[in-house]
Image (cartoon, rainbow, N blue to C red; front, top):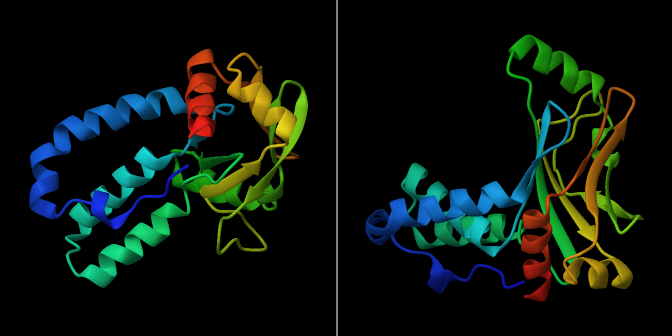
Length: 192
């Protein structure tokens, strides 16, 4: 999948002019790419457009205009764009109450290594790119990648494979089967 290039990123004024329409389109796209993983985690499959949206919103929120800072944001968020035969997902650990969230982030230490994807019954290894994971706890946001086997990629690109995302941790275990629309989105990502 193509990374976000500098020429695609609009300056603040130009982005404000198209923001509402772009935002609506990305929200709809994310709706098709987001799944609940149990009651306290959400998985969002990333692609070029979700990364571009994050870049534009970060530039807008932080009022970033210096070229070196713009390039830094592009480089940072391009890490979310999957490479060949890859899926990329951001996982959110969601406990609304601070006390429970703090307790669970400690209980979920080691979570980084417990995610998996199954495509057509074949389990795929999930690599966690989250930086700054602490030994005695986990973080509330995880950036992950899955390098698919050729067979899994072929099955997923065919659009008919059963695809599920799971976590198997002593303090939290869940698996979710992706709806057909999400599988279609991932197949489209893999097609380029």
